[in-house]
Length: 119
Image (cartoon, rainbow, N blue to C red; front, side):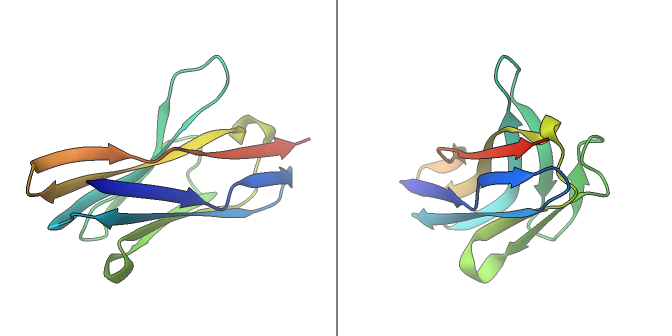
């Protein structure tokens, strides 16, 4: 079993910053791409940013230049630094990880952390 635990969400004013963390634990042989997605009320979940095991990144157009994804492979942890936050960034943020373990290769999801940006 693999567990992903997110932290760092909260309430912030527009223009402020937050840093999200997501730690993976459990049965992990290899940890491939890790990513952050978000889901706002009444909207579909959307990919925010992803990072490969080698450090290649990609971002949604809506967050380019404001958000930075990074990872610490020694800690099996992915981070999302969010700057210049806007009310439209309000959502539940989920991390996911592409993992290989004794069950093969699967994608695991965290429970989510709420980010609320006030205007």
